[in-house]
Image (tube, rainbow, N blue to C red; front, side):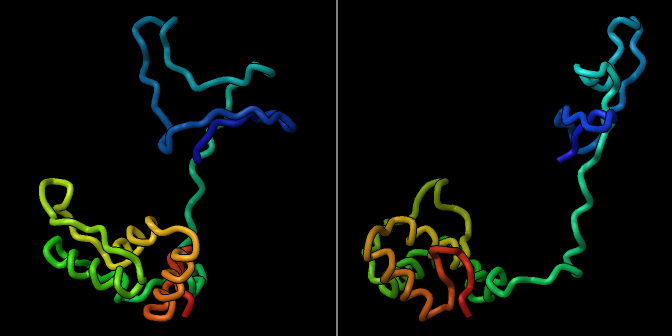
Length: 150
């Protein structure tokens, strides 16, 4: 997060800032001139610190649990989703409460992971654990942690 910080050592005053430093154009009236914020304790202008540069993804070691398999990332059209939902609910051992797709609420494609997560969100108690174990056995995906187990 970009922020303005006090340049005085030991002062912990800071103010949140936009990710790009604002440019203050000259105002016609000097009393209305835009200015960066100042430290209320030391009465000095705060120093702008931009967002830290994110690490290069190629250099970051990937945790195996965060890499989803291609099957889970396969996108299903709105016409294929009811059948997928029915099959997944049977696999998980939970009732399928899906209904006929209609209207604007049901127009976008979903990945298998999204359908599993939506079904899993409706489970409770022991049914929740048995549904998660069934998905882990079949796909190696744990819907409780939303991570791969294999």
